[in-house]
Amino acid sequence: MTPERLAATLERLRAAGGAPPADLWELTELMLDPAWLGHPDPGLRDELVYTTLAGWLASGAYTPEQLRRVLATATDERHLFEGLGARDGLSVLTRSFSVLLVPPVLASHRRHPFLEPDEVRALAQTVERYLLGERDLRGYHERLGWLHAVAHAADAVGSLARCSELDAAEVLRLLAVLRTAAASQHHAYAHGEDERLAQAMVDGLGRAELTAADRAAWLDGFRPLVQACAELGMPDGYARFMNVKHVLRALYFLVHGRTEAWQEPVAHATVALLEEFARL
Image 1 (cartoon, rainbow, N blue to C red):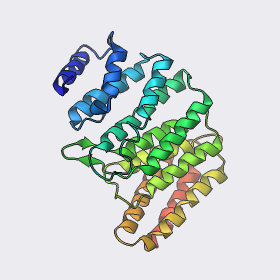
Image 2 (cartoon, helix red, strand yellow):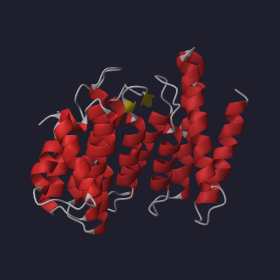
Image 3 (spheres, rainbow, N blue to C red):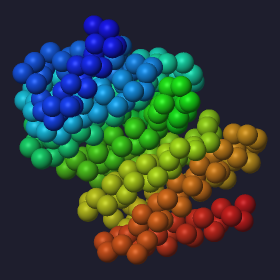
Image 4 (spheres, one colour):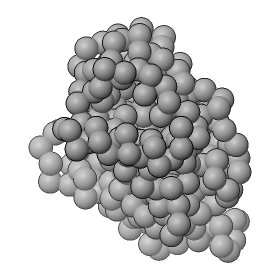
């Protein structure tokens, strides 16, 4: 199939209301091919292929076994780990839009559970491996459109953090991964990654299984990361410093003045950290 023909097919389905077609699974398998899921044309990849898949996943059109197959494909070596470690090129498109399929599948699972606890735990480890290994941190490209690997991975981590199958220790592990991503020295985030990371942090911090001490210890973990900025030097140390500040500011505004009991203490502790870091 040519890009033009696939685009025409998806545009026709959208014009008809976007309902899943009779050949739903055949078309799904086609769009899951890295050639289309990671296509360099943002109009085809983002606005048609991904948006169509996400809409169908949200609609409840797939069976549990088909949802499993979508998840297994999106997180395999040809998708989520294709070219992992590269700092430029096109492979990030496949990785980034593969990990972005995790949240709608997990949303279906949370509505009507079909994954076993061990499957959710294994998925958490897979997404963790991906986020810690991603090195192409570009947010937006003039020709390629949204790359946004960190933002998309943060969405997946936040979706995992809301899964009841994960216990407090596993949620804290995900929060630690988000903290590491927030303190990246490889790239200065400039396309909303701070807010997406902060929202995923809220998803984890809001779990009732966590104690006030858990949340305080997690926030304290930012301190050595920032203190190491001086040793990293320019530009890496400055990139980390600014990334951490921006993520913590976003976190503060997401929890300050909200009604859940855990939120205001986290807001106060976050402000204290920001004030401390301002004196460095």
